[in-house]
Image 1 (tube, rainbow, N blue to C red):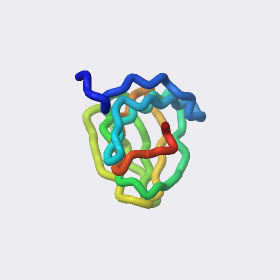
Image 2 (spheres, helix red, strand yellow):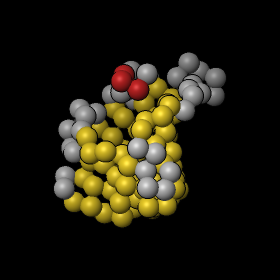
Image 3 (cartoon, rainbow, N blue to C red):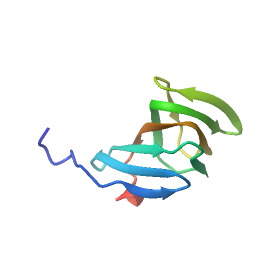
Image 4 (cartoon, one colour):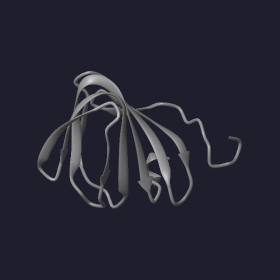
Length: 107
């Protein structure tokens, strides 16, 4: 696509064995890839954005509101606004996250 909402941002080191890359964004919505090394950690955090996550590849132990669940390729779920969440990567993989509204801290 060639509209102004499609971008090819560079990979950014997010720390903990994780890299992120914004794939597309406008004020209302943002699509971000997160590439995890085996053992990579997405530290527990929360934010005011509603988030959807799709597991493109890999295996993760994902924690949300104090409950941990193993997720793998093909799984998807919604994280409500301000919900504490994070994950540990069991097998290297890629998560595709969508945020509404856009996460300006990633730009």
